[in-house]
Image (cartoon, rainbow, N blue to C red; front, side):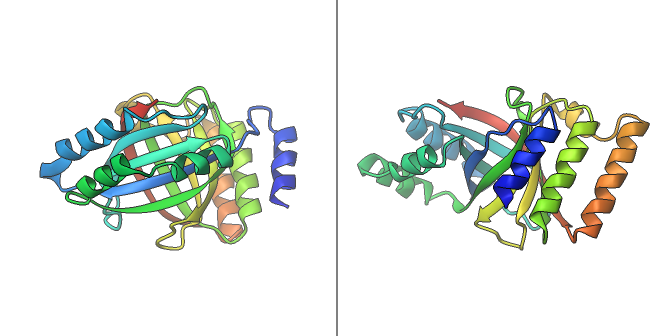
Length: 228
């Protein structure tokens, strides 16, 4: 059913890109005095890795967050192919990997999550500031449809992805909207820019309420480095 809904949306919304993105995140709690050590460890390992085509890693610090999110940094692995992503993650073994993990454990506590972006907009406009809004959704198809209608009305200034959190849920959140901005000022002034967009956001909020979707939390990340 989800594939059918996505196909219908692709036919109805011209700015929609139908390619799914699969992702796996590692959220790290890094004590402030150890930040530089951890960043060097991450770079020292992944800068020597041969990434397969289509698999990308972004390393970011979490600049703004709610009180329930303890993570300070996030590693995001993304691919258009679930097989390529899983093969790459499974390949992270051996003495170098063991040494890297052993060193990281001295400084950090981490957890993992993973999921899929079903709706992707402006895929070529990924920018260094990213904001995530997570939701607890009962009717995922209605959520997806409402998000697509909103995105078709408002003016998009950067990459936007809408999808489902499938693994590593901590507080019942199972859906998200992710948007990127070129700088912090652009992130500060996000929101409806005219009467048409205000109406679209109002309709979106009403549909979210009617479908039983509940806003969970948001956080903002700042890109440090990407690989390859």
